[in-house]
Length: 220
Ligand code: CA
Picture 1 (spheres, rainbow, N blue to C red):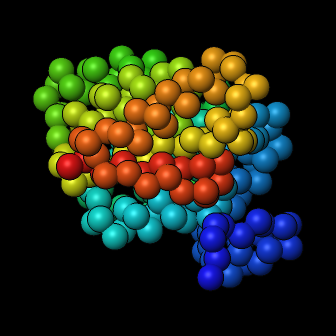
Picture 2: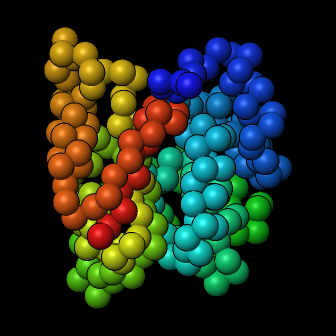
């Protein structure tokens, strides 16, 4: 019996990608393009994209919210899994990075499912709430500035329906969260959210060692 997740050597990880991820041509092209950027490490991993697409299919999700779109890989993976009338609201502040995203969504033929909101995500989420979108989302993915996580999560809890899911990325932050020597703002912000979610009775929670750590919080 295994007590914890296997350490992924390069060989094991390559094996996992070859056998466990069916990446579309559009996704692999976008991943390679983004991989050439200096900020490439902000892109989610292929197995994480496949995992979120699986969740969307399992939930029968139709309405998805994303905070932190970057060059569009996660939104593309999810949009491919949404039904034809599915809708994804993508929030980001970078016109430069999301231009790559929009081009990739068009190439993949899913751009009609995605609405990009180019503004600070807190404002976009507040606007959705003011517009009466409470409880109207099935799934939300949070992967943006770490100091904003708590605010995105609290708004997300209003925007997703009971039974809906909020996925939060980078919750292990390269292991920094468990290193008392690390006291930078991002690490402390992630630690605070992790601590809160561990005891938050409004949600069911599981933290997965996927990528840089992914927490799933299901609204009760
Ligand atoms: Ca991330």
